[in-house]
Every structure is written in structure tokens, then in C-alpha cells.
Image (cartoon, rainbow, N blue to C red):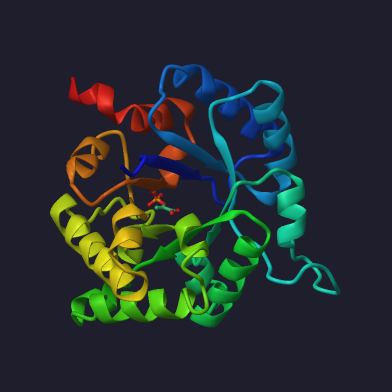
Length: 256
Ligand code: PEP
């Protein structure tokens, strides 16, 4: 049974103080939610404060980072290492987000190095894959996702793959208000599961969690979560407000 996960990616929004306020508000709003794993991914700057409040107040949520560099330490001005994130009790690290790939030029090889560094420091990667609008129009979605997955998971062992969460995020749906239809997202996630099966076998494919991301909101989360293959959501814009993020986390109550 795959435990649903809802992760909020706060991108380059919120000061450390604002991040702590949201986390406290969110914790209060979702205090009765038991069967969903909730992750918040603030900016590097806010990780320490958020980590402290999660620990001190024993909050029902995990901590994620939005990025990492693959080296342990060294002369890499402006970068943050996996060892530093682990020291802040970070549980998950987003790798391969489309903004990193497209704005900062991260290649599949770089994403692979980051993913392996996260695993080597006993944290869990949230690996984002997804096609651009042009790639979709050229009917290259399957090919692009296969190339990303195979490249990003190169040399990842059967033991380590169990710690990986995948997020299918069509680039054209991120921050645009456009969402893949739930059936479409489900079909692509099913293909991703089949690719994982071809690499790691059916047991891993059955167990691995695959999220959907791209303009997820309180209004569309229930429909997405009704799909068989969708195990949760990576949420950007709608996770910046505690009320709307809490509604997404509590998608099951909306069904009642
Ligand atoms: C994201 O940043 O991963 C994302 C899906 O953003 P949004 O929900 O704003 O589309």
C-alpha cells in the first residue's frame, strides 16, 4: 500500500519568519490528518528555522530542500552540500525540478549526481520529470520521460530506489494554471511505473510513489487523487498559503 504524499515546494518565496508562521498555521489545520505524508520545502535560508519548529513542536510533517549540490564540501561558492542538509534534519530533497533544468541548465547527468548524493547521505530524493509544451506537441512525452528517468536513475541500486519518490510534472502545467487532465496524468504515471518495472522489477514498481505536479489546487486535488496511479502531489503556488495547502492535504474530507 503506497502512502499518499503531499509536498509543498515554496520556491523562492517566504522569508524564514514567514515560513515558520505558515508551518505553524498548517500544522494546526492538519493536526487530525494521519494517513497522508506532508512535506514542506522552504528555501535554504528558512530550513533551519522550519526544522527547529518541526522538531520542538513535534509537528506532523517532514522537511524537504529544493536543491542540493553533489559534492561533500569545497570551493563551490553559493552551493549547499548534502551533508549540510542532513545536518538540518532534512528528509527529502527535490532534484530535477523543471525550473532547475530549464532556467539553470541542469542536465540529466547533473540530476543523477544530485540524486545519488542525496541517497548517499541517507535522505530521500523527490525526482521530477516531465515534458515541455513543445515536446508534448511533437508527441515526444514518453521518449523525454524515458530519457530523464534512465539518465537520472543511472547506477541507483535496487536497495536505494526504494527511497526515491518520483513527481511527474509536465513543464507546461507548472505555475501556469493549466493542469493535465487527471486521466492523462494517470496514463503517464502508469507509463513511468512500467519504466521503473523494466529497470527494477514489478515489486519496486508497485511500491514506488509517483506524484503529480502542475497547478494542483484545492479544486482539482480530489479528482487527481481518485486516479489509481497517482500517489500524491507536488504543489507550488497553492502551498504558499496555509489554508489552501491544508485543503489539498485534506483532499479526503472534500469527498465526504
Ligand atoms: C512545482 O513547483 O513543482 C509546481 C508544481 O508548481 P505549481 O503548483 O505552482 O504549478
